[in-house]
Length: 187
Image 1 (cartoon, rainbow, N blue to C red):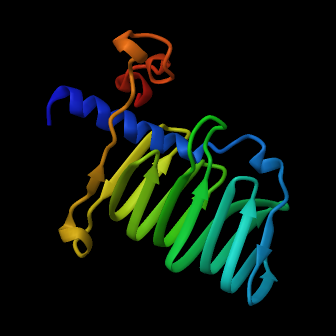
Image 2: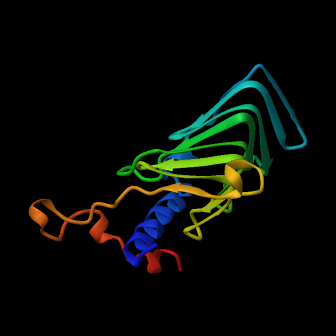
Image 3: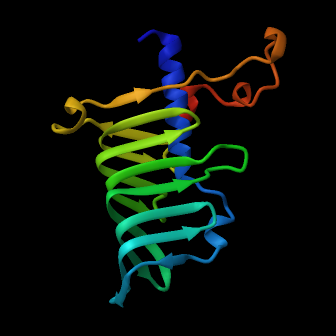
């Protein structure tokens, strides 16, 4: 991979990592849930059967969803499915991040999402697939592992080129040109 392609890959990975930082309005919104069955015990809500959850731009669909609370605040959301689906808009001016895996763990405090077993993340035309993917908005980091079973044990990526020039070839006012270099984002 040449230096230009590496820079593009790092920018795409950084933009996917920033997805865990959701729209600020999302956390102030009510959580809406629907499922075939619901139980709540010991600060843990367990929802099974055609589960749908939404909170602002955050949407999760799963076969089983567990919400772990502490002091009436959601700490972790765990979704099981074949696959489970997660989507959220990181910023008002960006497209929606769409993720799927058989197991999705979303830690609100750490601003981190763990996708396990046939994991895929899509954002702005780019895609990362593997057996296990972790992305952290706080750390601006993505870690992907191919595992041993799925996708021949390798991480698969499709990275779309970043637009970095204005019309007529002039450098300048595009959103990407205002971004810091990839090395700054990933520190």
